[in-house]
Amino acid sequence: MPANTEAAMKPRIVPTQHERRFDAGEFIVTKTDLKGRITYANRVFMRMSDYAEDSLLGVQHNIVRHPDMPRGAFKHLWDTIQTGREWFGFVKNMAANGDFYWVFANVTVDYHNDRKIGYYSVRRQAPQKAVDVIAPLYAEMSRIEKAAGPAKACEASLAWLDQQLAAKGVSYEQMMLDLFHRAV
Image 1 (cartoon, rainbow, N blue to C red):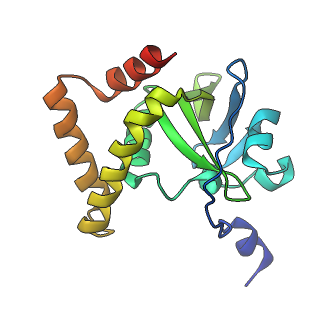
Image 2: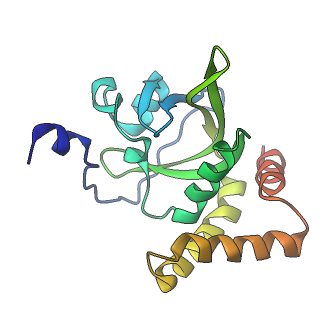
Image 3: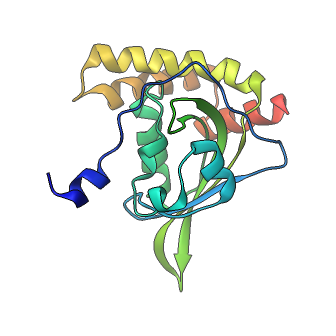
């Protein structure tokens, strides 16, 4: 396998049950290009993800994707930011050693001279009360995705999520922001 292909592949990491946390006053900040490849990562991100800067730059941001995260959540994120709107949500990430950490993320479009050049994300430590609500919701979305199969996974879990939101009379963004603000 050519070296550049091997370097671009996501490493196989076995998740642990150990949670990492960061201070409430700290922020994880990253920038990506339009394809989701990391172009900037701050020191908090490097510390929490347990990757050095040279291991992150040019790599897909999903290098920190935890397998507990439903694919539908990321489809919702991409569908939102590709329209130019900002996205708020909770994400469970995985460090290089398999540890996990929860974040409350805000992802926005990054512009240069009025041209869309990528995405900018700022993340805070997710409050435990919010995680207690989100984790079972994501677990159900993941269960639905497995039952639906790869081809229909995202649309099946997002359809279920839309039903849950409609029953509560809230949008995805409202639910995420309410969970964050009620928990802090």
